Image (cartoon, rainbow, N blue to C red; front, side, top):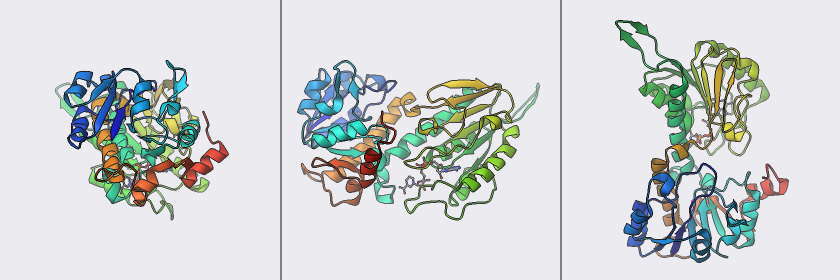
Length: 387
Ligand code: NAD
């Protein structure tokens, strides 16, 4: 197949969908790889590294999009500022597009891809099942975000993380509270522990308690909901009554903590609001909140996505696209995820995807001129969160 790797256009994006090592693997299987000039620069991979791996460097997006049968991309197609055209319109008719499509935010892109009969796979829609773990780009990126969130907090906190016993006295460890212990939360716990902090966490899914404890953190005990998760392992949106009790439990912890990392999310919905502006006042001056749910509306009422704001002496960081701040490993992990999907969807030289496979089918949003995912069809019909 003729495979294209465009340069990402989204503001602040540094990742690239495949790194040179991935290109070598594809070339060994007789695929032809086209890389847009400068595609890897943000992630420290030069054009010459791609060339040495067997790719051909192409100038500008138009010729790349026009000739590639399949595109590996990080972000959804968007309006291309320099060209004054939508990237989706450049994708070859009947081609294949693999990337994070975020259909709630990019309804226009999904519609354009469908109208061009593109087979589009969205990495957020890979089913979270054991067989698909190698393709789970949400987990890869959440791992990086959880790690980086703690480093951001440590950078800003006017204290150290570890317990130190020195001739100048004893420095107690920082207290870190992690709300939501999915993939990002667990990595945040592990990172904060490595830095020597005292860590506690909460998540309404019962299975999480043991995972939190196994990382050496304590689990904040509160009444657990009866029906916490979907069959797919995701959290359900909790009742107002549960959230009210949860906020009470959080409020009782806040006066004692230095750093709060919030990661609570419910797939496809606005993130639950767990820390109000009033609750922020319970934190000591100098404390830090890193809100990893900022792009989904935020777990803290005062969060501003993409900004760090100071309220009552507390800094609230509305973290956005943290994986782009670690682009080498983010691109390496993401590339492995999209390649695994590619190998599954197009086994042994196939040029059309194996739509019988549940993972391939689950990740496919548009095919044959239609939006084939029912939930996404609904989202588009409702016009939810259109740009
Ligand atoms: P996510 O990003 O959707 O949510 C983050 C966390 O927020 C979750 O742990 C969720 O329980 C929590 N949350 C939701 N409402 C909350 C509330 N009111 N208060 C506090 N926390 C709240 O989740 P994720 O990290 O992408 O994944 C969640 C789970 O999905 C995993 O832990 C696992 O069980 C499952 N999963 C399975 C696989 C697999 O089997 N291959 C892979 C990845 C994830």
